[in-house]
Length: 411
Image 1 (cartoon, rainbow, N blue to C red):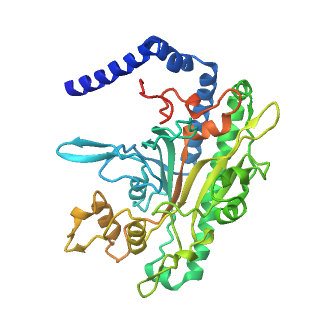
Image 2 (image 1 turned 135 degrees about the horizontal axis):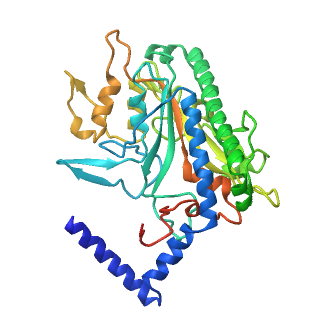
Image 3 (image 1 turned 45 degrees about the horizontal axis):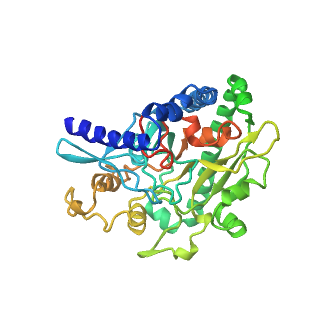
């Protein structure tokens, strides 16, 4: 503890000295970057809307029969993520190394193992040390620590590996059905939140100069491949959003995380799908994107992703193949006699992958087939409220830690 106090104190001493050399003081810095925001009307109204948003989503999920899950902030395993990050923070405790969670994705899967549970939700913590912008430009949507409401629902389809290999038409039909079910689920959740905010926070929306529409379902939907073909690989969400009047829309079929379902991926006789044949039609995941609407002009802001999710890989063999092919792990587990012979090569994945391999007494997998997603709370607020009053994601947070915002986070 004393070492930490000394290290942090020395860092603050250097920071304060740099401020003084520029002709300012620590008080000036705290007042400008913290106090003025904390006492601002903008943060007051954004916080009122946040409260209604979280309460409405929580009530919706409870009414749908989902159970609340505890937060998991430390684990030996965390979401590897498909994009670059600076590093994964680790903590030494009781002689072991634990990682801070990028997301609770693996905890969500395991919590759905109980066959009596319809699904779970949690206002989950996330710590992601995003790489700083090379040009030191304010990146609107990134925070080092943030909250998202995570949801995972059991599908209970019971499709076997034999079905996966040999009954492609039936499996595809079931997956298409489940995509419609989960997308409708999240659409209804968004509608419930928008209705609640409009009911309780009309004055705050007015003071922030934005309109929040209660969207009609189903939301407009775009396949990623079609968007990239039409608009190019960068910024296609924003460009697609310019085509439509709806404040919310879907983008589906994004090749991304190793746990997002690609079907088919494995083929009979030890073969795999040709990577060139993996298209948006075979990737069962989705994003919701959202825009703000300026109350005075009716102008829409560029769209931003606020929710991402997927039907999940659920069978042990494709789970392993995706993890290896996404270079999350260098080798598959070697499981014999109730142990993993090469557990030392698997990082924190060993226990999780052993669980994924386990069978019930009838020979069926214990690992659940699920679908779900997570909606970023701060990201959603920023996407829907930005305009003349809310200009960056920091503006909707008390303690937001944008990697480009400050040289040192004081609170």
